[in-house]
Amino acid sequence: MNFKMPLGAGLALLTALMAGCATPTVTQTVKPGDNGLTCPQLQNEYAEAERLRADAEKEKTVTGGNVARAIFFWPAILGTAANANEAISAANTRKVHLANLMNAKKCELPEPAPAAPAK
Image 1 (cartoon, rainbow, N blue to C red):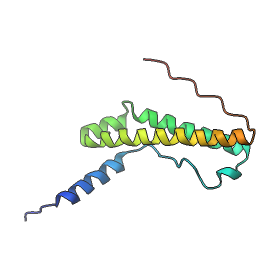
Image 2: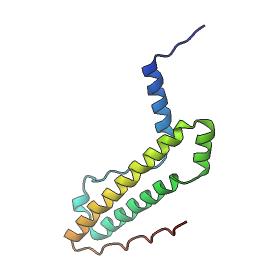
Image 3: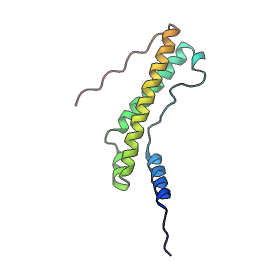
Image 4: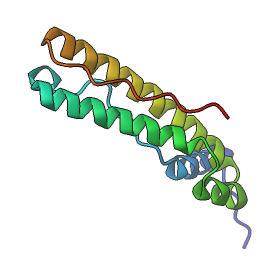
């Protein structure tokens, strides 16, 4: 039996596989109800956005998952890198949005995360 997959279906399958391997969480930059959050809630959301950004940064480094993706399905590493960049951008945009809300409500802004040491 000879099975041929149409090119479009093959590309769709490849894209789905790559997306499935991309692990960093891309957060919503603005969530419903943000305007009604209290100062402590805004600070918690800010900390969560920073955690998601840091997790996405880690995905851009050599990790066990990235090595496995490179060995078993190398195009997935490209999907992970693209997803990590999207997650970092979304987390940074969310942090700006939350900082603007905190400024408007006269909340204390969280301390900036320390810069990573240069290698």
